Image (cartoon, rainbow, N blue to C red; front, side):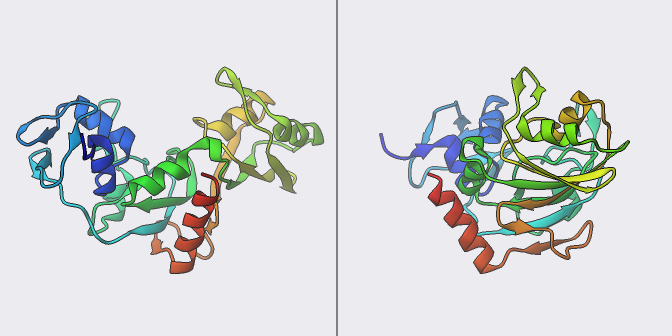
Length: 239
């Protein structure tokens, strides 16, 4: 049977990630030719797919944005979380076309967040086995000791696993920089807690070749053609 899987179809149409597409299908929000879609369904050319009653049409424009997420904004496309109304990142930006965040940056943190309508690119960036770098600036609640920096760099037991070795260097007495190649839930905060430190400020400064630069908090910019070319090149090189 030809065609492409329903989750990939929605991802390539710029609707959401494959993971979110699977969730939408399971929730019964997706129809294929008028019937409720099922996980694993394949979409043939010319078939009608709708989500929440709206027909899915592929967005021809490739959209890649760098956004300086402020603290308090949630990295999701949902309107609620744990039953409570939230202010999500898509609502905050109010971009005129459908986009979604590449991964998450927790609510209490700020910094660089990539936004796109290119689901396949997003999926490849998020796959931790490729080791894509993400750089952070962190301030903690008391003086940094050398044992702390060494321990953070070697790997830390968190969430029933041990974090991968990473680069860590001091900025001043209470702040440091760290480069991660994985994305566990609240990873840096949990790593610091293991050594008895509490994070008081956390900012993501870089994802792969994209940096915050002079971007102001709460603002976004389109990636340059060269940034997009290099981003895609790094993804391709790791396949």
